[in-house]
Image 1: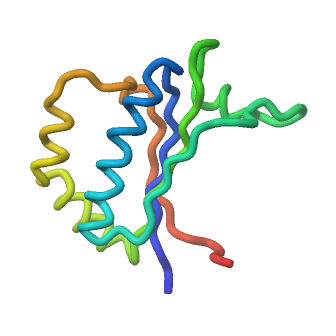
Image 2 (image 1 turned 30 degrees about the horizontal axis):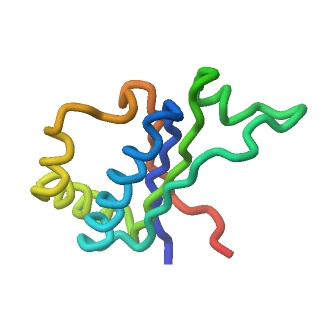
Length: 120
């Protein structure tokens, strides 16, 4: 079965990482309740590998920032579209977005939807 994945690369200030973790924990719960198969949020640990492009460079992270690499898996693109619409209408997500203070700048976030090529 082909699955569909939304991927994210987010530069985030170190002093805002805990607030991001709190929001991500809520988001993970909401996405899974609406049908997402997996929800992962990972914080950079080994980002500057010699002789390769780094995630830090790809995300445009500054000295006081790290990188969050995350993804959400769905049964299909149609399911992704259905689930994301439901999530955006969920009052918990609307409330968290209306709070005003976001722990990162969404304009700096890289995002894309991906068809699976290999699942092992």
